[in-house]
Image 1: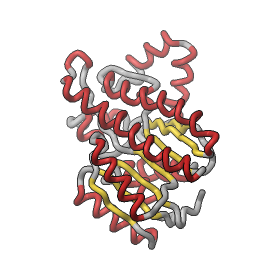
Image 2 (image 1 turned 90 degrees about the vertical axis):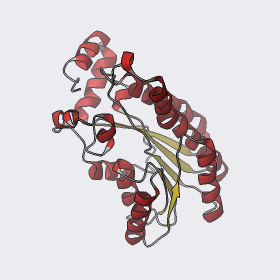
Image 3 (image 1 turned 90 degrees about the horizontal axis):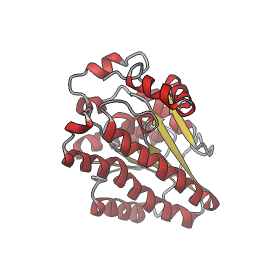
Image 4 (image 1 turned 135 degrees about the vertical axis):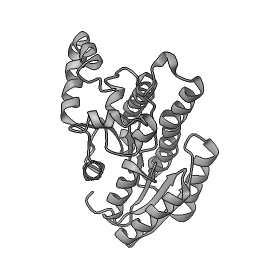
Length: 263
């Protein structure tokens, strides 16, 4: 699906980071884009750039995916303006590097509402429309942390592990309707994500050599649309480590607590 001309693509978490780069990547391929995020001003700037890239429509809809009413409004807008939805790229999410015993219960609940429940609800509403169309693709950005949990990421890893499990079942349910579900599991990405997750900046500095470039990674994701891919796992070193983690769990625990623990 190199050419997305005429396709309607929804991107959540589109005001910055990977979501922003995904928006630019699909716009450059001619898509009509619907951008969703909480920060309206930044979202509007992304939409303006998308119109320049695509020559097509770019709609900025302020939306907190953790709020059911906000997601309902988002989809009502898509139905009214486009009448169809071809691709969803769910990039909304946040993290916090905190030991599990010190985690604020309110922050735990918020993280699940955004990273898991919000993405699940967006996926559900998208799936209903795509099943009627008999085509479409849902791409959910989870994390390699959902497969290899490390210290200070217990809650974040749990939100992403739940999303991976959800995608695995949803993929099977939607296969007969010709709707693909692709799960993207990145390791660290050089984005503003870590301004919230680790305000000290030390973690991103430590993983600089393996951290993903958001522009290149967005291009990789978009290049796989339409190819019925099940997962994308990057960087390769962490994808390989996951295989070892599954094969030899005790060794995996040691690696997760030492070699791959940069926090």
